[in-house]
Length: 208
Image (tube, rainbow, N blue to C red; front, side):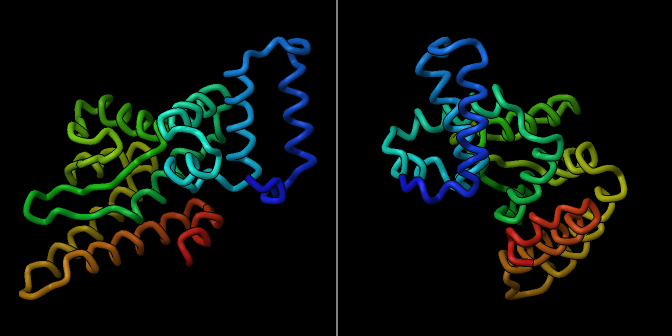
């Protein structure tokens, strides 16, 4: 990849050298160095938003290896406290709604984030269906509301519930565009929630 894509090269080098030499020169294994570099690339080269497939091509490594390194990087170097809250909101902007089955569907490539969400569900005695594809999550409205309440509080969960109720009333008509109505509802919810939580970067990330 082009080294010019690293936005803060001085910080990148400083953090790399600090971590690399923390236990003495050559103390880290090749795998540990790969994990460190992946973490730095996600933080300083804007690669966090890219898919595993895109990174596979960019970094010339198998997709399975990229996926593993990203997950281990998040475990070894935990992101900020709001990471899960912020990233889950972003994931919701790309979700779809199966009106007939009443299921919300979205993809989570980030294993760290997926395990965090599954943990929230498990704590509530709920689960998400990912039997056919571990990255594709199918979740009921009630389960999604439980996750939202756990992550963002009761008031924001109520905001989501009211928005969803309003959306469902729109879907009762004939010849309605389910995908657009659902997308508009979710985007409105995410934008308003991002505003309340002061996630300004998230709002600009989705173009609002």
